[in-house]
Amino acid sequence: MSIERFPGFIDVHVHLREPGATHKEDFYTGSRAAIAGGFTFMVDMPNNPTPTITKERLEEKVDLSKKALCDIGFHFGTNGHNTEEFAKIWDSPSVFGLKLYCNHTTGEMLIEDKDLLDKVFSAWNSLKPILVHAEGAQLEMALAFALKYQRRLHVCHISQAIEVELVRKAKASGQPVTAGVCPHHLYMTGDAREKLKGYAMMKPPLGTQEDMDALWVGINDGTIDIVETDHAPHTREEKEKEQPAFGVPGLETAVGLLFKGVKDGRIQKEQVTKLLYSMPKQIFNIPDQGDTYIELDPDKEYVVTPPYETKCGWSPFEGMTLYGKPETVVIRGKKIVENGKIVTN
Ligand code: NCD
Ligand code: ZN
Ligand code: ZN
Image 1 (cartoon, helix red, strand yellow):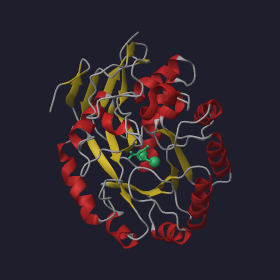
Image 2: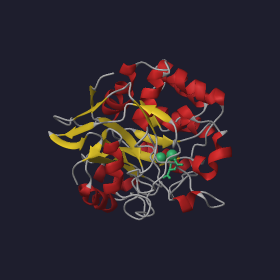
Image 3: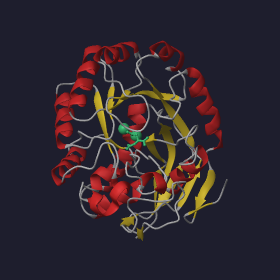
């Protein structure tokens, strides 16, 4: 057992809820959850109640995010009717990609019309990736549009065996596509809904054992490039409703779950850095953070227990034994976490 140093990890898929839903999370509390979990850079999604689909909304977010304790970038959003905004924002250093929703989920940005999708893929003439929420058949369609316009495509939260196969085939054919997986899809199947009820409801939904096994295979054969948390906090009240809100928080548990994967022999230790740092950095061209690192003991176990830093105050992994809780976090030479406690505000 010994403390090891790792780079500050990168999470390219979080929903920090500000502005518009700050009863769930905000940039400050979300950033506390990030650093407690070992992340020093994250990229926020555009599905706020007023979506991030104009330059003005983007600038508002950049401004609001200044209170965060770590670095935050943004994915721009589209409903198919804002393509004239693309060229105004795609060179912004705050923008890392364009997010496209091809299935119903939290937010109001679903695009189902094929002509609109065609227009979006055609208009995004940038090397920054188009990120898709596209499950099953929708993924096939997204891959086809990306191929048609030769756009770089990042498949978010891949969750089904059939999707792993689609990405594997696309990669084999030489198409520039990457894929991310969420920790909850690696550790839970639909059976978890019996006990966790609404707390186990998210998009894409939890799959079967076969899906879960395929995701681990995909990680190990290079089909899956990164782990993204899809940190999607909702209040307990929202999760206990008859129609629960979709999404689970994940920033504080992702690293511990991956080191559990190492402990359990599912992946090698080097892959953790690849999945949470080198590959996300490369795919999304995340800037260097000088003198930034975290320290943890990958063999040291801990149990997921409250309190949590995320404003929603719960975790679907509560009670689970994980490994490697971040003990030190340093960003640009400044100690942010010391002995596992946040020491700045
Ligand atoms: C996300 C949210 O709540 O913003 N929910 C989810 O279940 N994953 C939206 C999304 O990523 O699809
Ligand atoms: Zn999604
Ligand atoms: Zn998401």
